[in-house]
Every structure is written in structure tokens, then in C-alpha cells.
Image 1 (tube, rainbow, N blue to C red):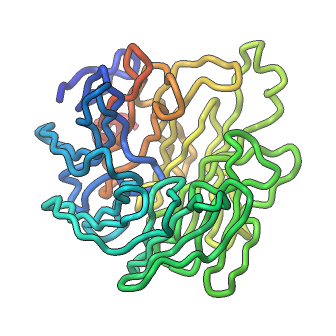
Image 2: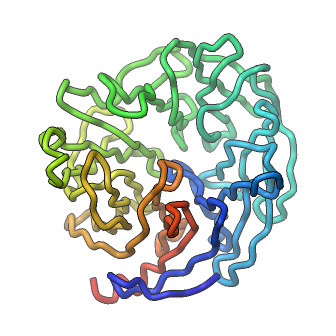
Length: 353
């Protein structure tokens, strides 16, 4: 771990990794920290010809790194409340990981011959859910209840992704139609008991919705609504407006929580008082990339950390809060555009808020 002063914002940032491999934090749609905030978790790519990658944990204070899983595991994510992680070995074997000891226990199997299309997610009842690419090439939502066999609860020929079971309601699974861009109707909610699917945010033809995340208590979701008005003129260097909108659990009411240029991935603090998002160059517009902090009550936004330019989507900053809500973890692309994992302590930001 090294500490450096951000050249633009002046705030101190801790960097925990360095290349030449890509080191990226867990996706922002799951918890990234242990329950006590002592550790955070990230993925390290393997060196060519050397299987030394996998999921690692970092001690926030000391910077000590320890490998949790190797390259045979995928989809690592941490529980919203319990000090447990969930991961898949060899695509279909599901394991629970004790985040204090790294001890792993197999808890079930997903359908043979398939693979997850994102990370695993868990409700407070222990039910695990994921989007899945079946052996027959159809896409599905799959649940795994404690002590039971995995169950395919929904199938479609649309490519499914970003599946997130509601943290406090095992009956609701949010998912998207993944186009790697705009979609006619991207966001969907599935009712497990009723086997009923409906749009979550109902899109108009001119809208572009992307990058959605549950709040930890399952009461609401944050998502990005990109402003299509500037897309045509993006080649002229114009910035694009990103609106962070917050919807209730049922998708019946939405409010604009923030409006800033070039935002992409939003996240909500556990207490619901703060938002963060990355500011990224996209759609022909180049901008100083980094992390933005937003106070929900006032909609005040502050650019708090600058980063390098992302080489690929895997290197996006994907900022998210620790459980206490006083730190933000983010990936900072290095000189090669590859993500390296950093933390900024928000207490220094709040002093001059």
C-alpha cells in the first residue's frame, strides 16, 4: 500500500495494488467489505502462464494482501449482512466463504453445463440468485435455497445479466437485458413465487437506462439515466449528462437524485444519505476521469478523486462505499489503462464539505 496526494483534488488516496496485471475491485452491485470493514475484496488477473490470480482480500489499514480463491472460482460477492462471501468453482459448484478465516464450504450446485453471467447475490434468508447461461444456450434466472437443489425459475432467449436478488425480499430478483449498450427495455423485476416478470423502470424510446444497484436494505434502487440529447454531437466533444435516479422497491416512483456530466456507475451508502459515481469518458467525449461524491439531501456534488483513463469496461472505477459509509473503494486505471485498487477516506472530504 502506498499513500499519495491526488494531483487534482488534493485529498489523500491509498493505493493497494500495482501492475502489470489488472487488479479490480468487486462490482459495485455487491458489498466489497467485510462486516467490520477490516478487509475489502478484489480480483487479480493472472500473469501469462502463471495461475496466480483470483480473489484477494486486503487489510484496509496495513495493506496486507491474502488470496481467498484461485482462478478456478468466479462470481465472488459478499453478503449484505452476514460475514460471508459466495463464489462458484468450475462454473457450477457454489461455495460459502467465511470472510474472517477464508474457510470455504460447498453449499450446492448450479445446473450442469452452464455458467453465471455476473456475480452471485444473496437475500437475508440465505437464498442465492444469479443470471445464468444454460447448457442449451438459453438464459435463465437460477435460485439456490439453503439445503435444497438449485432451481431454474425463469428462462428466455434474451441475454440476461446484472441479476440482483432484493437483499431483504427473497421473492424479487432484479435483472437486465444485456445489449452492451442501449436497450428498448433494459430493467426487469421477477417475482419468484408468482413466476411473473415485469419492467422495473419503463423506458421511453429516447431514454437510455444503465447500471442499477439495490440499496443494502432493499428499499430502493439507484440507476443511471443517460441524457440522449447530446449523443448525436458527442464527436464535437460535448459532455453528456448523467442523471442518477432513485426508484422505490416496486418501481412505481422515481426521483432524480443528481445531475452531473459523464457519470456512469452510481452507488448508495447504506444509510441512504450519500451517493457516489464514476465520471468516465464515453460516447466520443473525453473528460478527466474519477470519482464524484453526492449528498442526497442537497444534491451537492464534489469531484473527490482523479484517475487514469480506463482501457476496458473491466477497468471502470465502479466506486462503492464501505459498510460504515466513510470510505469509497474504487479502481484507478494505471498508465496502461488497467485497474488498480484504491481507497479514499471521506472524513477528509467532509471537513471542507
